[in-house]
Length: 322
Image 1 (cartoon, rainbow, N blue to C red):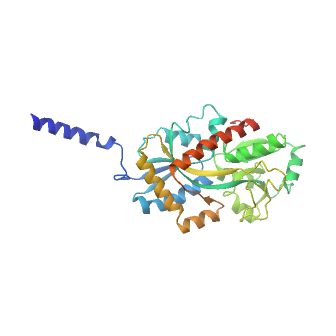
Image 2 (image 1 turned 180 degrees about the vertical axis):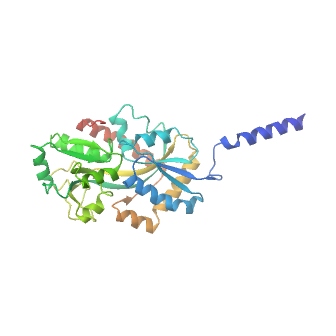
Image 3 (image 1 turned 90 degrees about the horizontal axis):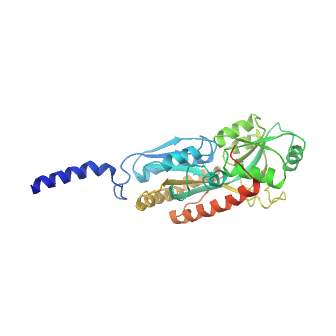
């Protein structure tokens, strides 16, 4: 009888094994999926794919990148919020993660309840750009035009920090009615501005950078504290008389809430090792990113501060989800 009972218990353990939580020792044992909350070509997609190229060297498993774009980034975020907390589905997103919960009571996720922060990977400033054929050559000329003409600007999506930078400038400070046109990521938004549909963009720097260098876009202001080394000719908002606009787009990775802390830590260690690789740092810096890194605990505190900060900006600007 005892032998039979032992056999039944053993069989039960085997049957339940696939559903047991992974440990740092056993994880990962199969491919990891990174869900990118925005379209290809934007800052989140770029950083995710740089990481995906290097992580297999450290974790020993393939990394599959999937884009689940939406204008807010909420679609991909919701997908990961509902995923199994086993470390095999993680979210790559932007600072929109911290903004959207203030913009909409129906964002579909709670940043603290539904996620385990892994790491802040990189950050970069936002830039106001215009199509090469646009008549305004400076920010002052652009704002003057907006007083008498109906203008519109593109952003990577409602709730992204470029969206908030645009609203902060046009609505809160200049008191101008410039229409916001959200896209499903920085790539599509940049292409739209290059085509002149619309002719103005508020974007994180990575996507428009090659078009600025080729002359197809013209940057009129950047949201960093000092001029950017890759765009030394572009004045900062502070220089132009708007010191309150020092705003950044960050890229980060999250796991679903309930993911074992040791698995989150293993992912954090792997991402930190990637960010410390010389070729990765040089590549990210060439695309205007500043690599960050750090612990999950540091990042969790930063996320809380970002949610609080952007709630104030949303209130000041009256920004809404279109």
